[in-house]
Length: 119
Image (tube, rainbow, N blue to C red):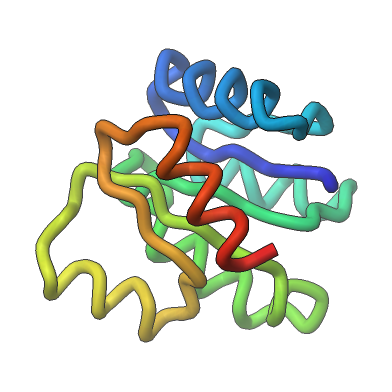
């Protein structure tokens, strides 16, 4: 599987990538915001996307909306990984097409379980 990890924090991207690697996923591309993610999506196909919500230029929710508008990404699993843990935010993200939701900070076990739910 080819993952796209989108987060404006290089530290958080590294944590997510290391966690994915530890559970067996090594084909990972990184992007620092939604604009960069969409640029990479034009040249590569991804099997799953993990995105933060709060990012400059294009936030995660805007990215999810853009992805779900693309025929080739209508059914690609998307996990929102964010500090936005309120019920309203979770409901909003799911309505926009997020398949699962992880609140930071998280454990590798939580990431593994959320991935197993959608992949």
